[in-house]
Length: 185
Image (cartoon, rainbow, N blue to C red; front, side, top):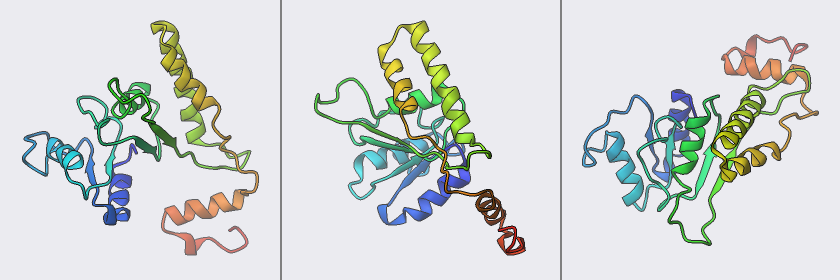
């Protein structure tokens, strides 16, 4: 996720999986110091009881290899920065993997009613375009495949969600759900 508070929420929700987290506010330092980025990455690699690394793509983009211990990535949200997204994917999908090793990338996108729109859908469209442009410039078929995967994903429009559902959800997120009259919700 690109949001620090969401990282903390995931860490709390996944506490039974003994997660570690990294983001831009986690200092760099020695692998022997658990409070540093390097120490947390080392723990994810070596601690058999640590099942989850929660990170933002910028912090988990460059300079780390996770492909020997991690083969699944979940994106709760993404930014418009295609290089962060592509580099974060490359942390778990690298040369040297066994030929039969699957790498799974899951991207969660919000579902919105037809006339409301979705920031996730906008980000997805822009990432596809940026990745496709990079693919053409670099003549890299792997980038083309990533863009095609994105385009073949399910449409993030849920035609069963009504505008009032979105109004109530926004009120809930703003901690004022009780303030919305029932006829509006």
